[in-house]
Image (cartoon, rainbow, N blue to C red; front, side, top):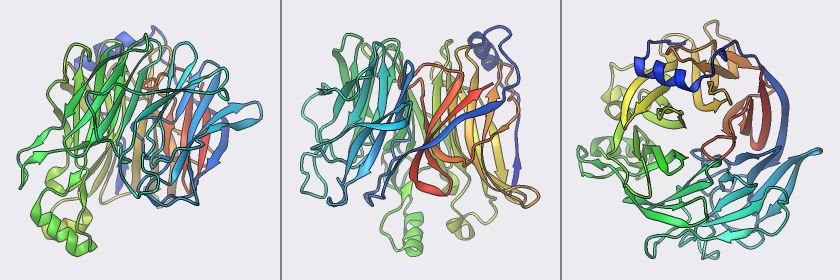
Length: 466
């Protein structure tokens, strides 16, 4: 595959919007300086279908003032899947990362996202099972509130206010987002294959709104039905909510499903091929708007994964995602003329419509094979917007490539140089101290995740944008 950086012209709306976020004279070349690179904890595989990075749409890393915190996932060797894990909470101190607290009684399946609110509040979204002796069954969403100044002190357990009695399970597919400065937060949690339940908490700590987010309909499928949307990036600004996730349903086309069954021997195979977006300008007064399909690889059985979402001060919604063109197992039978490609893509939406889109990194069949991984946004106090991402494979000369890179998205619609981040070992998957979970904009990029070649080590890095 041939790797290239595709710098296409953007719509004028992007240029005007990003200029409104940029301080005059702030633009200039950036050099990433690695200030810290260290392991936080080690996680034994739980073999329950989840893992430390499973809640990739939220984050397990948050900054409150001068302190940075990480939530962890510990596998309990004496417990059986699915609920064979417990949450842990770490703080980075003068002597490195120290465990502050761990769940003493609950059992869970999935990692637990963090959020930070004004006033030094640190919040942990948990989903303990109500039937620890069973493989699967009902669970109860909770939010644990810690004091960032004293994270070892007893925490407060907060129960979200839902609309009625609901059947939550250990498969929560939940999203946890906050506006740190405004003091608001939202929790969304899936109910089966039909919809997500959501609950909004205002700056006074009251659950002032709740409701359902019905999934988009797949009318074109062999058997029409709702398209469950999972692994979303959710952003909250005051009372405005933005939601962007990927389709996650059993293969909807019968001929493809039968072919996959012959290839894999499995009775099911899931579809991750369509990227959907919806929003509400005021979640306390209005429902979510119509679904917008940002991208699709449905025609060639490809693959899409959400990357990140950021709200500009001008109201523009910036979205990142990765795409794979096709399922190579099916190419000979169904798409013999199609070529494979891998892309890191970017779009801007305004008022619920796609205003501009382009490809940031593209690997195409027939040349070098520098394949982009998931991208994350990072915004500075001046409003400069960067993309941090991973690439792997081989370059045009056949040399192995495995590294993180950083590029700036400029107001005129172009990108800055794609600069290698000089980490000792790159991160193949990571969380950041994202503003979507209440951490402030910063000139320092902080990440938590898995490094290439070391999937069981959950590591941290701090990178100054010099």
